[in-house]
Image (cartoon, rainbow, N blue to C red; front, side):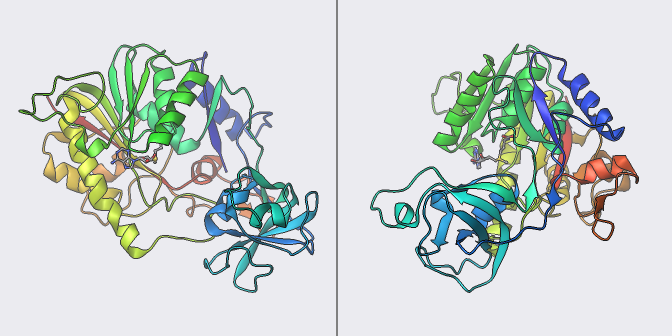
Length: 400
Ligand SMILES: C[S@@+](CC[C@H](N)C(=O)[O-])C[C@H]1O[C@@H](n2cnc3c(N)ncnc32)[C@H](O)[C@@H]1O
């Protein structure tokens, strides 16, 4: 999988292109994108079962935290070599000694807690339970690597802030901002000059944005805990506009709506924990957020809408709805445009689909299972743009 770095103190875009080109040239990099390799491993007799969400996190490079452990072998003690499995159907009982249900092997590790540390305690257990030493997929860790200088993002996420194209001195709103990956990237593209207002509705996530902004020494970011659906200051409530939400209509030069979504583009993933009800709940929520965004944007301003999902309902259908509902909006060319175009089926014209950017990991196979090697001799641009999470980006101009 390919990731990109937001780096401060250098021309980010140059660096991005630089990294990207070096990848395309097939050169090795010390600090870079994480390819994921599948490895054959032997399994240990001591077994640990984790929930599907924890399992997905492990596949993406995480260790196993104690709270995610559902079951551990009876005699598991600190220091044991263990094999970790994910309970893909959510059927494992917490505290079970063994589990015979549907499970997927996700790698080997070393227990940092014993079974009794995890299950025979009244207080909630925190911290690492299993240190993964041989995950099924390996990707280089960026933990604590230049924490004040770089912020790791996947490729499409790094593209989003460039597409927004924020300029120094502008007033920019990031409506769904936590943990602040794009917020901090936007602020760095603005040379930390202007105002970047980051809003998220979950308080502890807002603390994460503040922490990341302070780690990267970005002073132009202000973070607020607020429901962005209600972020327009309505008259005649008599509220004086303050620095934070709610905001006056038409008061932002650029707005990013990196919307809450079904996350179906996230990978690797082995289970989809969403119910149909939850899956269909995102479209109305995103429309409410889009409506707020249009109200808050200045005429002539730019709105970027993005999701990390692949459904038509949360992507192209939202664009078609927005264009119909708000005649002041028009689609804009995206720069850079490294993903594919939009998917037909939502009533958008071919010209409109070309203006959209869709990253689709299912489009290109990058690993030749039979030859047991990466297909680096094929179309590298297609490989690079597909070997990432599923993602969607639309850029709108609000006509004056
Ligand atoms: C896709 S994540 C954002 C990722 C972020 N832009 C980044 O790059 O780090 C979506 C975020 O939207 C937040 N969220 C969901 N509904 C919201 C609402 N009504 N108002 C504000 N934030 C909301 C969630 O808490 C979550 O942190």
